[in-house]
Length: 119
Image (cartoon, rainbow, N blue to C red):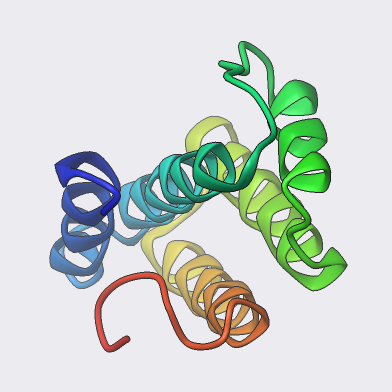
């Protein structure tokens, strides 16, 4: 239904979790980002390709995705930027990964349990 992109991104995130938790956070965000865009495009009234994160959030609202989904998305975006651009230690990366998993869990619950590994 969502193609290979989101599932591959999510699988990569979980593969990287022990090896490189910072990049796992980034991959998890992009998996969620692509998954929510695909899901929203299925529900949206007309074709639209977001070119900015703000446009993606607008698309999510138009598609009727729950506020909890959008909040978890924003949290994962924040964590992915932190993982990518802040000079963090490996242990700090592990903590960021734990936070990202909590946001991902909240997102999956808001979606009714759909969305990737363990769904």
